[in-house]
Image (cartoon, rainbow, N blue to C red; front, side, top):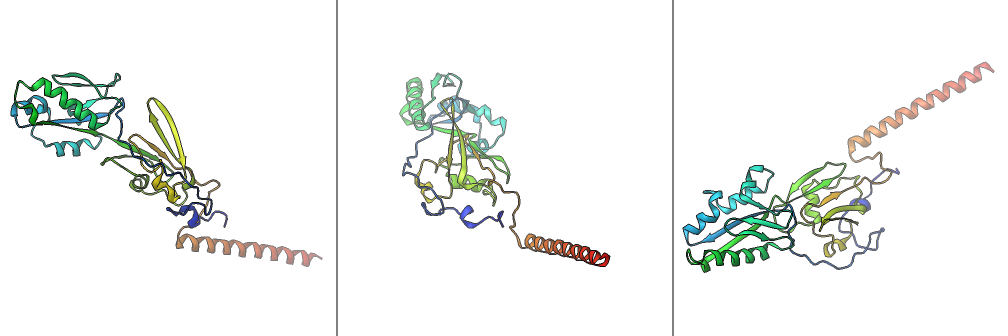
Length: 264
């Protein structure tokens, strides 16, 4: 009975203040991801001038930008040829322009920066005012470690919530400790660990709601959990085994008592 898992332990979106569910301050303020060393950027230059297109997009061949992004969402190393690595000095090496500082900037800021830099460079080639740049982060992922199963999952959109991340990983499982979910996050060369109770309804308005690329979500087992009944088949098996063992012990005791009485 002590090992049973109740709904209070596993249900999400519970009201804070009940059953030991904590309150969390309303601090939700999603911020655009700031680029870090090791990130990879897919950059595509759009222009009405074919010479400009060929100059900056020759490596992508006849593939469309959407096809490129879909391919690079996986872990295939071949697509690294079409991306720009944020180097240790916080820059990317862009053709014809040179090193562009991008560390700490959002993709929107990098887009504007590249459009300014390229506009100055190609104004002698055509109508640079009819040019735009697309910038996307590729190969973004997060990891989950739990007794239910561990793995790394690709991030396909800009914002991913903690609930979406757990759903992608196949949920937490009956014996995962939802009251002590940990997120290990690296930021500006430092590692921080965020601990929170994912059962609280307040999560949707808190700093814990959105995950970031490269986050590691760790789900530990419920303390003291070593045995549980979570299906009808298991219940029947446990009951039958218990009754059989009880009958064996009872028979052994009766035979022992009878043997003692017969010797007296």
